[in-house]
Length: 268
Image 1: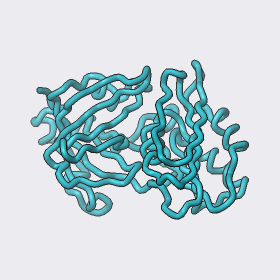
Image 2 (image 1 turned 30 degrees about the vertical axis):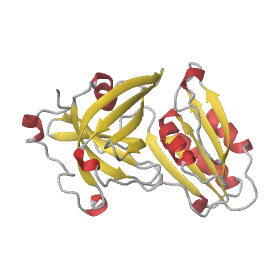
Image 3 (image 1 turned 60 degrees about the vertical axis):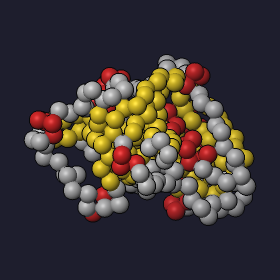
Image 4 (image 1 turned 135 degrees about the vertical axis):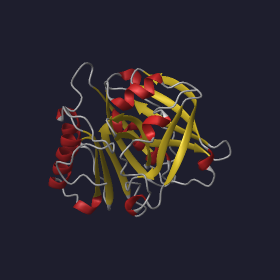
C-alpha cells in the first residue's frame, strides 16, 4: 500500500485547502484507496476509488473531485477529474482520466495500483446540464469526454442532445448510453496536435442549432474553448446560453489547484 504523498510530506505542506471554507464549504475531504485501475482506450485510464466519506456523498453531473497527486516543495499539486460514476452501496467512485502527457497527475494515475491511497476533495464544479434548455450542445476534446458523457447520460428521455468530440484516434471513441435523443460526431486528430482549434471551430460554424432556447457546453483547451464561444455567439447564442470551461492550456502546465492559468472568462 502506497500513499500518493508520505505523511512526512503532508505534514509540511503549506496547503490553501487545509480548511474547507469559502468556495469549498460544500465539499468534503475524501481519503481514497484505489480499488481498481484499467486502461479502457489508448488515451483513457479508468480508476475506481473507495472511501468511507462516500457515505451520503452527492454530486451533480459534470462535477469533479480534486486529487492531491504530488508536491512541489511545500506546495500541494492537485488535479481535478470528472466523476464518471458513483456506486453508493459499494462506496465506489469511478474516474475516467485522459492520458495525454507527462504531468504530475498522469504520472500518479499511471503508477496507481489497488491499495494505494490518495487524498481528494469534492464535489467541485459549477457546470451541469441546464434544466430549462430545449436542447443541449456539447463540444470539446478528449479531456471533456468524461464530463460530456456523464452530463448527456443524465438528461431525460424527452431531451435532445448533440455531441461533438475531438479524440486522438478512432479507438478512443466510447459508447454513449443516453436516454435522450442524441447525435454524436467524433473528430479524429490522427497524429495532429491537441489544442489546434481548426476541427472543432469548423464544426461550431456548421453544427445545427435547433429552434428554441438551447444551451452549449464548451469544454477543453483554453483557447479552443474561447474560439468556440466566439463562433457560437456570432451565430446568435447569448452568453447565458453557453457554459465554457477550460480544462487545460496548450504549452503550459496547470496550476497547483488543478486548473490552467486564466486567460479569459471560462467559468468555474
